[in-house]
Structure formats: structure tokens, C-alpha cells
Image 1 (cartoon, one colour):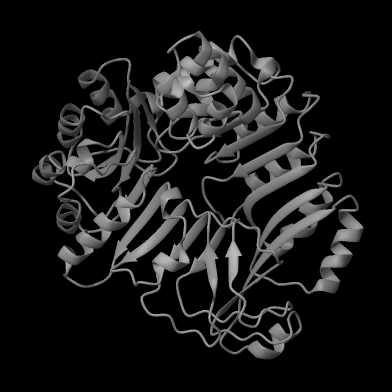
Image 2 (cartoon, rainbow, N blue to C red; image 1 turned 135 degrees about the vertical axis):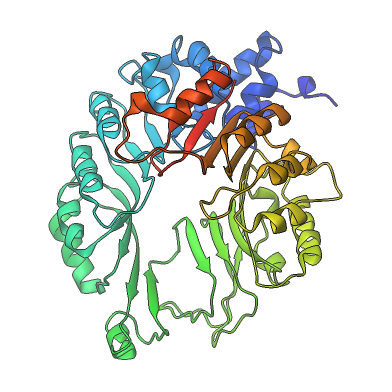
Length: 486
């Protein structure tokens, strides 16, 4: 059976399992019928522009943003290493949001608060159907004045009723933030460094959020060693004791992340006894358990994990805890302090074999260990973005040459790496023909925070060595340069 024999309805359902980039790259331009199906799919499900090549981003802009902006209901932007300066490029091509009259939802990933974020909010205020913002900061900062100001700016968009901010809130900010959002009916909120009981939460809600019908909150509270931990926590929950830090959350658990990295004591106001929880909301799981040591077993099966962090060698409980390995799109790997990298490589190859849709793979370890572990026997394993970048883990010319010969690296389309000198970068670009994006730190970079943009020696050098079509920019992170290749 061929895809063309399927009905349009089945094709649209099939497209739901693919990313925007995969759909556009594979099916755009096949024939008139597929063009109509793609248009219907994007009209219903919107555009997720994470992990998309620059050429596909530009093509989507020409075909959909320019010609039919009024049909678009949802857009997701990202300004991370795989798509640097994506939001600026959107505005540079003179799209803007004023013509997206039916836009209902906007997600913005890895954009620091500042003029660009405020410009986005300013253009959203006049859209008649807009109601939902997902905003994820590029970093967490104890000095969060800019983020606080950005949330204040949201109040000028009167139709926003749903808000999810992955923004760590300090206790002195919570009340003022709630006062900014009187029309919110759905709120998910992360709170750090303090805890409130149910009575205090009710007062906050009644006073500041009279319209809220759905509230989900998560609180993290770190206790001092001198605290009477049991007495303090019993004020919030019946009995709950932990060695150092506590996490309180509403049930059902609807937040994106779960930390399963140390011995865990699970207590609930809901009578769970031996119940096994099936969780469908957590998509990011930090699983670094090598030996489970819980006084009360944490019987949770995560069915929709797409971001997974593990430490090798992993214990056998991973397979029963994470039932959704085929769904994983981002994998973070760290190594225990042992030298059995042959076993680590075999485990990792087996795990990667269960992740056919993996997009991003992070491993930040000693280069010699990475070269050993990534020397897979299978040549079919691949990932979109391989992130090796760390300022303390430097790859020299020989190691870059070895890296560019590994099939797993050859197959990747984006790479992040710290190198000994700039010639390593040119060698990698020339050797890895599949690269669409590259993020580098180079030891011979003389740039510092006092440097001016038009006197950037390293960027100017790259401009003389590489095609003019390549997009290069300094990242927000110190001494990081992003390349968006054609």
C-alpha cells in the first residue's frame, strides 16, 4: 500500500506523528493533492519551527506566512543552537503578526526577555482570536527583572486566558505576578524557594485570580539542616520527610518534568497505597538512578517522555519506568566514574536503537571517552543534533578528524562542539556534508564582553573562509558562535 492510496483524513492523522520540518521536507512539492493536504494540516495544527533547516524555514515563510497568514492558528518559534536568530529572521523578512488574524497560540522557546520579546507581545495585543502563550526562558536568573517586566507586558494582551510560564518564581515576585493576570482562567506555575499551604493558596487565588478555573502549581522548598523538617512540612502535608529538599505539587501531576535522580519518598493526601501511576503529562524525565532506595516505592510509569536524561551504565528499571522510549526526541547522557566504556557503548547503542525519532543527543564527557562510546557497530543510528559542547572539554584537530569519520556523527545535521582552534571548525564543515547548523566554542577566540560587534575578529575570519550565504552570530552564552548553514 502506498501513501497516495490513503484518504486525506488518514494522511493528516499520519502527519501528526511527524515534525513540521519532516513533513515539509518530505512531502512539499510532490503534487497538487499533497500541497492541499499539507495546507490543511498546517491550518489545523500550526507550525512547530524547532529543529528546522534555514532553507525550509525560508520556504515556509514564502509559501505560507506570506500568502495565507490569515489561515495560521498556531506557531512555535525557537532561538536555540539549532535555529539561531530564527525569530529575528522572521521579523527581518517583514512578516510580523498583524496579518495573522486567526492566530490563537504562540510558543516561544529560548528567547531571553528584552526588546524582541516585547515586540512580539506588542504585536499580539491587537489579534482578535489570540488567547494562549507558552514562554520558555533561555536561562534561569536570580536577577529576573527583565523576565518580570516581560510578564507585566503580557497584561496588555487582554484576550490571554491561558498561560504557561516555565519561569522560576521567587517568593517576593509571586504576589505581584498574580496581580498582573486578573483575566487568566488557566494557569500553570512553578514556584521556587518557598512553600505555601492550602489556606494561603486559596487567599491568593480569591484575591488576585478570581477567574481561574484550572490551576496547577509546583513548589520546590529547600530546608536548612537546622530546620525541624518534619514539623515544617507537616504544616503543608500530613507527613512528609526528606533529607534536604521537598517538592509539592497538585494531583494529577500535569507538569512537564520529573526528577527521578535520587532516593525518593512519595507521600500524598490521596490514598494511593500500592497503586501504580500511569503518567501521560511528563515529557522530560531525569533518570539517574543506579540503585533505587525508597522507603515507599515510586511506582510510576511514564508513557509520553520525549526528553530523557540518563547516566550510564543504566539500571534495568529504566525499561519498565519509561514505556515511551520510541517517543524520545532528546537524550542527555552522562557517564559514571568507571572505565567500562565497552559496556556503556553497547547499552547506548541498544537504547538508541529504540529511539527512531531522536532529534537531539547531548553527551558532555572527555573527548577520548566520547570517541570510544560513539564508535557504534551499526551505521544506521542517527540524530539531528549532536551536542558535545562544553568549555572544559576541548577537541583538538586529531580528535575532530576522528569524530568526522564516525557514522553516527556523519549522519547528524547539527553539531555543537568546543575546539582547539578555528581550523577545526573549517575541517568539520568540509568533512560533514549533512550539516545544517553548527555551534562552536574556539580556544583561539579573542572576543570578550567589551568587544564591539563590528570588530569581531573571529567572526570576520569565518566570513572570509565560508560562503556568504551562511548565517553567523554570537550567542547569548559567552564565546559561543552559531552557524546556520544552507
